[in-house]
Length: 254
Image (cartoon, rainbow, N blue to C red; front, side):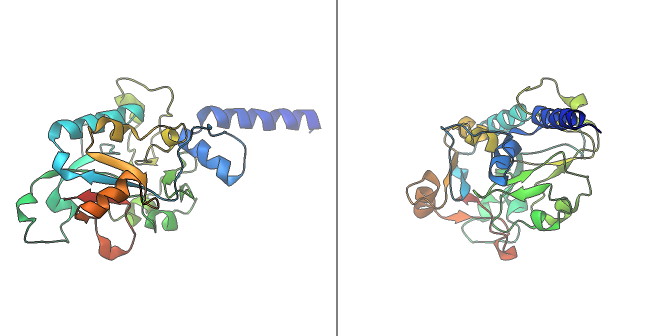
């Protein structure tokens, strides 16, 4: 093969990758090495991103607004079956914290809370993925490379929080509107919340945080002046399944 032909094929491959790559993944590629994408100067950075859910401000209306903002932005389909895709969803307290009890929390058993990926400090999903399709960024965000996912679902079995969904169908069939700035997925791919990494790289907060009317706080857990750290100093909080040692970075302010 002549060198000019090899060069053409190589460039075509890079062009195709750039066209279809997930924005947040493209941001990660900067840190991984290949210069496929350049973060903006306004990017938000942290040592460890974390979220605090103020349960006192969580109304059904606020939670629905958060879910709509997230799922619309990320082209998450609404499938009316037990094979629905979820990045952000509602669960009662007793389901999220069934292994934790406190005499002052018994009246909360049926109260609905928001649930999402916990972006764990020690994510078991990363350890069990055979293709490295799921990985952890230096700022603590656990991402998915949709193109490398082979649909083995080991990550779903490894995640103790049920935070991942598998596309049993082509999700595009269930999308009423499409956000052209975020890629759609295909049948046979696992997906989940990414803490809106692509928005952070543009200097924006996660979509659910902006829609939450103050019920969701987001910031650098290592920064003592961040909203999350300030809230954790002032309020009693819970994390899901702390005994497992995964180190969840989503805190629930009680």
